[in-house]
Length: 96
Image (cartoon, rainbow, N blue to C red):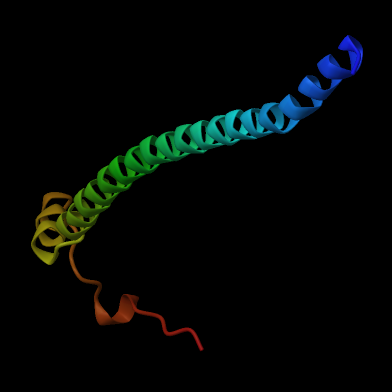
């Protein structure tokens, strides 16, 4: 065998090993990218949970405020403060 064909045979025999190594590197890189994406989504999910908890607390506070502002006692106190009284029967007009 000549020197050229011996080098060529060595290069051909190394080709599957090089392809396998390239595949392993690509697979490792893909796994790394997936793990980074999972980590990012985990942070995003955590932020959304915090936001949801904050919005639920705001909702609860607003419902309490609505209940307080629409309470009969408060409305009666405001009506007397502004000298409001129930209408006389002749002031009531029925619309049909």
